[in-house]
Picture (cartoon, rainbow, N blue to C red):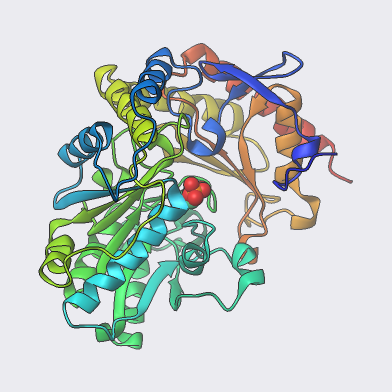
Length: 443
Ligand code: PLP
């Protein structure tokens, strides 16, 4: 019997190794990692440069508490991240993962308004069908009822508006531009309803990951969101934990929206899974107000700026730049989109194929015309995952139970080093897994 509490660990294969785009289990079976775990392993597995960087760092300095010392990899990583950050972002706060990055962002935003003499600002606004982490604060802003339900009342007052979800919500007679404006204007309506003087920030994923299957916004939506935030002095907090660090073909997904946030969270592709690391990036405006007030951000965790984690992330980020992997993401992203289109474009139960770069999603529907989802009780996503694993393929399917209106979906986020041949293997195995899952449904 396993003593590990993590879900179903006892029934899962035992991972013992990995090379390139593959993981290997204890029986020697190989799995093509088409989801990078959960959009994490951007350089694949066993990358010699990252392994060497970690070994060298551990041998010299594994960890030094940042209350006593700074350390070289942390300083160098911060310089690199800020050199390439969206305009205005000036400081980096290193944590151990995405949820911690969200918690830091929520607290920083709150402290900012206290420091500038607006402590009455207490509301966050976020979107339905979003995910910002699993700690209680991050869960409170996340818009996934299925995850929130058991933990209510949550710690932070959050109000949710509609996601930008053109596949489901754009009216037939509405242009993309008009739809984007309509749905962005929900933010303004919510700010006015709550009272602008009470709102801290709006938080959103530029490309929605786990809860909506690589859902991109229509052009212009985020620009209007930025304008609305500016109009009311509300902070724009962008969660790039899953979609950031090159995943969509630019270093930050928000670059493609033409907006810069006041605060941004990154994780996953930052360290590529070689070490647990995340970060919050904050604008000079926010930091200056805090420095002029009480002097410092009131926060902290034991492993902030962990030297080995920072060394691993520094090597990952240098590799992405030196090996021009953003170009690879764009090129292989086109190959992947084409392969998915060929395999699933006319599939009776694939309603939408969407995404950007190497961040793609398939939405499964019972009926393409009405977009009616499958009955969640069928657990189609779990069937697809099991069929894929049986065929040596890791993909990231999620249930259609989310807020009761969305189809099951499959998220794909392979390593940036994936080859065209491996994309062919991915599409073949996914096609076979999806077909087998449908064949296994009760008639
Ligand atoms: N934000 C987003 C957009 C995510 O996708 C995730 C994780 O999937 C998180 C936050 C939380 O990150 P972590 O699981 O590292 O705590």
